[in-house]
Length: 61
Image 1 (cartoon, rainbow, N blue to C red):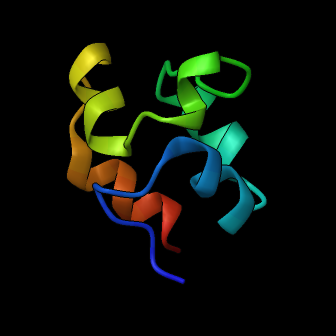
Image 2: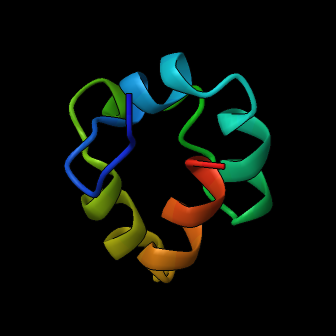
């Protein structure tokens, strides 16, 4: 399954076993955040001021 800007953070963590490490490296502490159950990747990067395309590339490797 491909991770997109519309994928909810909780799903990202299920799809990619390395997602927690990748998200943390980008400065996103979404791993344990209650918002991760409802927040999309696009919403999360907007809050954290992170460039979406680079993160998506890395998450989909």
